[in-house]
Image 1 (tube, rainbow, N blue to C red):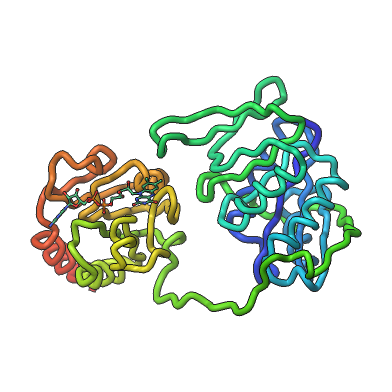
Image 2 (tube, rainbow, N blue to C red):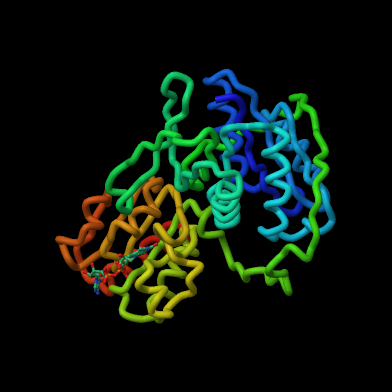
Length: 326
Ligand code: FAD
């Protein structure tokens, strides 16, 4: 390994949480392997993100600054990333593994003729060469990937890495990137941005998640889950079955193809515990399951299980907690 380049994604002038996680892992790996860590920032104004990336340990930051990069637009962002990859010569390119990061990672790997590994949760150094660990078969097994190409693009699964701890006294160099980019290259354009209405805590950030599944039988009981979540200062989540049924919006889906959460407490109500659902809660500290089927797989993951019809348990639990919390 010669150099690590991290895509330091930003929003509103600040590095995103998954970007901080990628920088955290980049810094640790660079330290262990004794190679330089650099970062690339993209946008209409890159000063703030560049300073933040240096504070997180990047010795050099490649700044792809252009007014047409104001909104996330993968076709145009890729130009900046290609320029950074060419300027840095890094052989390991680390990406935050959120939606935009995953899209860019795959497409950049293709353009560079590099290997690509997504959903990475850890690494191992083998004679100075990083091997990448990622879950397979819906989290039932772990696979270790060795690079088969000179370069590798790696997307890190959010919430699995310790974020970088910024130190504003760190010094670094900002290298402006000269690159051609034209709006005509974009095959899509941003027509409108709509802020998602959010009442309470964001699912991904919640310390308590109260999640419901097909066992709830319809959309109505989710109101009771909202009540419980409100009392506990948490957020509501759902299984894919509940989202697919249209009971709740798809943004609430937890799992392999939904949100990855890592709360202190996850309460699964009427959720069977399919491996694809469990893949989204591997970071949860305590899991409580309420399910009427004692054989439901969720009980293998749960720290505490209640075998019962949720209709009897939920009102009693909510009433007791209301008394405690007020
Ligand atoms: P079910 O499996 O039908 O379970 C319902 C549970 O409710 C049962 O265990 C039942 O005993 C219990 N129950 C019924 N009535 C009551 C009651 N009155 N009180 C208490 N308990 C009751 N799923 C996800 O959740 N997230 C994902 O990201 C995801 N990604 C997927 C990706 C792929 C490629 C595939 C193939 C599948 C994916 N799935 C995902 C779907 C997953 O396989 C399951 O189908 C889904 O999680 C099941 O949802 P469920 O547990 O709500 O429903």
